[in-house]
Image (cartoon, rainbow, N blue to C red; front, side):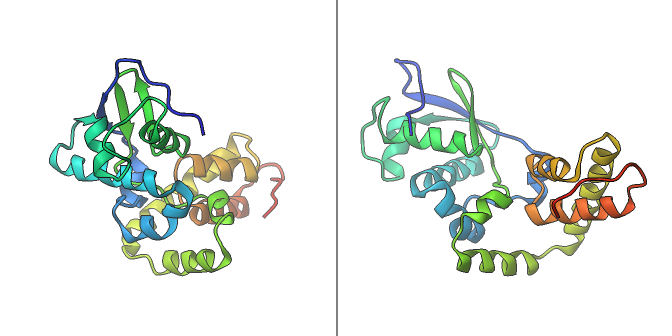
Length: 205
């Protein structure tokens, strides 16, 4: 992976939360068992430690804070010095690749305070044993009231997408882009297809 391109004189970034109303309800704290169990193999250990480090800093400074590269690299085990082509820029680039962070401008990085449930594509890359564990995890997830609200929202959005002319597969992908959990998106599309009174909806379900 290519290192993140940073200005030559850059040794720190202003870090702010990357807000997402859906993830505020369905996402997971980067320090949670879910992230440790299921995101770790996808994101990688260094990037996982970085988002956890940022989460700790947000606890103290929820609006924004200055990320000092040398201090951060030392804190998460990437050495006590840094270079523009070194481990920390590569770790930042990986966070951006998986959309848990984004470089807004030359001096500002936004990082998600909560990580999304894994997408269907990410789940397909997990070992069979972890996929089965993930299914059990989601089935046993607490806060049924919260999930009911999100399910209703996903269904309404799914129906709206079909009414706008999207096919079922495209609508499902759009719900995932909006950060609804993969299974919730799939179920919402199935619900909407059953109730759609327009033209026949193509679906691979």
